[in-house]
Length: 155
Image (cartoon, rainbow, N blue to C red; front, side, top):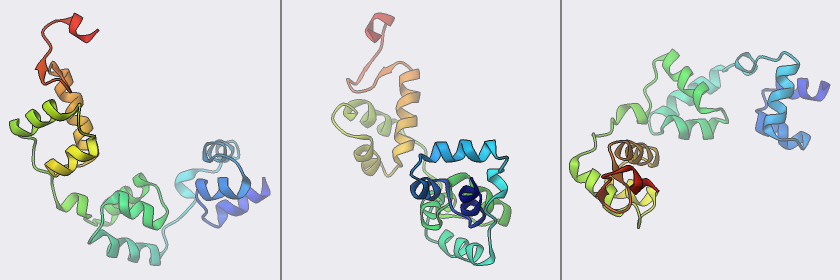
């Protein structure tokens, strides 16, 4: 496990370590927990990374930044919040769903992927998934365009 400790000290991610040690990222995570290595304190942000973060935030979302800098989404989000950095995902609030949007989702969900619906409505894939879930909770049978009238319609 000396190799694991050395790789952690070098600031390698679980995915990088897993690849080098021919293990899964989950196995690496569990081994780090057994060794008492606290994931949150393992890889400190250096000045260059903070500078890169500030530059990337001007044109990228938190998810895109996380991929570029090789960190997970929560650590990038927390660092941005800590430093008061506004990313593209925060500076462009999404407009709320309209009744017309809901009608399109209800009518075309059977024929269009979430990505296609998102592109058509100017939303994210996650926003479409969430909206479908909310519409289902309201009683809409997503894909057929009809309202559910009784429980046997669910079968």
